[in-house]
Structure formats: structure tokens, C-alpha cells
Amino acid sequence: MWFAANTSITAVVTGALFIVLGNTALWSIPAIVLGNVAGGFFTSLHSAQGPRLGVPQMIQSRAQFGYLGAILPLMLALMIFLGFYATGLVLGGQALANLLHVSPRVGAILFAVLSTVLAIFGYRHIHRFSHVAAVLSGVVFLGLFVRIGFDDRIGLAFGHHAFAAAPFILGISLAASWQLTFGPYVADYSRYLPQDTPKSATIGWTFLGSVAGGSLAMGLGALVAAIGGTAFLGDQVGYLSDLGGVLSAVVLLAVIAGKLTGDTLSAYGGYMSVATIVTSLTQQTTVKPRHRTIYVVVISVAALGIALAATDTFLTSFTNFLLFLLYFMTPWSAINLVDFYWVRREQYRIEELFKARGIYGRMNRGAFIAYIVGVLIQVPFMNSSLYVGPVANWLGGAEVAWVLGLVVAGGLYYALSAKVRHHGTAEADTRPAAATAPVL
Image (cartoon, rainbow, N blue to C red):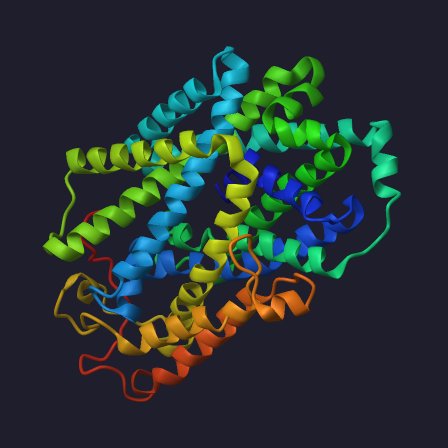
């Protein structure tokens, strides 16, 4: 599943950004691998939470932020789902447009319909489809690598050896951002595994699929951008299709399959976030199938609206989106992981996560302090088109803010959770979690 989600045209475009930002083809590859490994490590740690707790990823945030306080990270997660869904519709729509000879806007609408239908059918169908997408994308992407290897321009692209530290570090941050923004997704799909599934297996396979898929797709994007230049940047999907030659239709099918996997995950995850926010406010414990359908449709319509508005400035919008998510989601990830592994040590009362006045409270002040400080500490180090912090400017544009967000937010949350670590709550989170979660 995670290989399929990462071998998408959106990841290819992310790889192209490495060249746009000033890296050479030679130095793009290690930056891509380092960023995927760094971000994939933290994301895969979230995956182990699914079998242990048996609940959707973002509902776990109630243990850290409180029953109502968790609405904040849920809103941020919803922005992730909408953003990646929308960017997927832009690129998936281009692929459908090329395949069916329709306009990109019509292609985006058709792609939204396909994603919506698959998300409504749900979890098991998403898994089955991802098997097909993973094999097709893997074979086609490797074939494109071979095709590029025989291109006369690749030798010239690798002939440039100049190293620029700031674009290199910024590239690592972009790749890490790609992986870290999967954090709100992963336990949604590992939560049906048996509770005694070894952590090493859950973490290892998630890490391997995510890092291998992301590195493969981004590496392809960097190389294609290096040899294609403005021709690729002006029509990413069309250029890849032409690169496939007589197999251009197969390339388009691989792009569609890979992106359809990602967009379906985003539609399904968006539904999870909306349903959790609504049930937090109404204190419902179940979501009926017809309500799920409505939520998925609403998410799809919103994402489609964003996609149709952002088509003409896609690369710029996508870069800003990734950096924005990186600043605001890394503190949440750090708090969530520190709570699971070091504060409560995997011991939770699952039924209490669904009680407005349960043992986890309505608002957790310590988590909010850690989160806000984790965001603010990044400000001087930020580097985006909207704002460049003084430290980032002094470093020549190098991007290290996300590292501080992880370390400071996680460390501060750990310090502020001394009471839980030393004495536990009044109800004592000391027994293994039971699979007693209401149905979402």
C-alpha cells in the first residue's frame, strides 16, 4: 500500500522541485534518499500504533490534546488530506485528459468521481486496488529509468558537479515533508492488523514501502526535470507520457493508478477527520454508511474546487503547501509519538478516547503549550515564498525548521507530562488496549 501511495505523479513532481530549487541531478539523488529516510522513519513509527490501539490515527490525538482539543490536529490533518487530494486531482486529471483526449478540467472531474467511488466502497477495496497500482507503477517507473539512461542528455546533466548547500538542505526538507505528511494516514490502515503484530514488522514494511516508493518516484522526477527543463515543468504528465514512446498509454495508466491510490487514501482520511470532528461535537459513537457517503462526497467536492483553482500555478502552490504542512505537522507528530512510546508506553484506555469527560480530559494544556512552542521556534528558521526567517536568510535559504519543531515539541511535551509518566492518571493507563472503539 505505501509503495503504491508513494510511487505517484505527485512524488515525481516533488522530485522535479529539487532541480527547480537549484540542485544538480547528481546532488538531487542523495538529498532525495536522505529526506525520505529521515521523514519515513518518523512516519513508520506511527504505523505501529494501529495494531496496538485499533483506532484511526487522529483519534489517538485525544489522549494528548484532549477530547475537544484534538480538533486542532484534526483540522490540520484535514488540510493535508484536502491538499494532497487536490494536487492529485490536478495531475491525475492531466493523465486522464491525455488518455481520453479531453480537457484537463474534465479529467480532474472524472478523477474525482473515481476517487470518490473507491473511497465509498472503502478499506478492503483500497487495499486490493493498491496491489495493482504498486506493481504497475513499479514496472513503469523502472522502465522510464532505463529510458532516461539511454538519453544523450543524461550524461550532460550528471556532468554538473557543483554542490550548493542551501538547495541541498531545502531538498532534504521537501522529501522529509512528503513522508512526514503521511503521519496522519498510516494507522488508519494498520489498525485492522492483529494486536500482537510485531512492531518491527509494521514499522519495517511501512518504512520500506514509503522510502523505496518515494525515493524511486522523486529520483525519476529529478532526472526528468534535469533533461526536460521547461518542457517537463510545463506539462509533467504529458512529458512522461511522451518519454514512454510507444508505451505512452501504459505510462498514463500507471500515473492514473498510482495517483488514484493516493487520492482515495486522502478522500477516506478526510472522511475520518470530518467524522471525528463531528462526533466530538455531537458525542455520537457511530457513523452510518449514508453519512460516510455524504462526508466523502463533500471532501471530494472541496478538493476538486481547490484543484480547478490551482491548475495554472501548480508547482508554486504545491511547494508552498508542502512547506506549510511541514511547519505545522511536525510538532503534532513529535507529541503523538513521544506520548505513545515514552510517556504512556503504549498503554491506553481505548473506550476513554470516546468520552467527552473521560480520563484524557477535554483540553490538555501541556500538549497545546508544547505544540505552540514547537511551531513558534521554527519561525526564524522558516524558508518559504510567504516568509523567510532571519536565520534561514543567514544560512543562505537552508531549511532546518522542521528538525527544531520535532525536537522542541517532543521534548517539551515529555517534560510537561511528568505526572503521567511518574504516577499515571487516576484510572491508570496500565493495561493493554482493547479493541472496543466505536465504529467509524
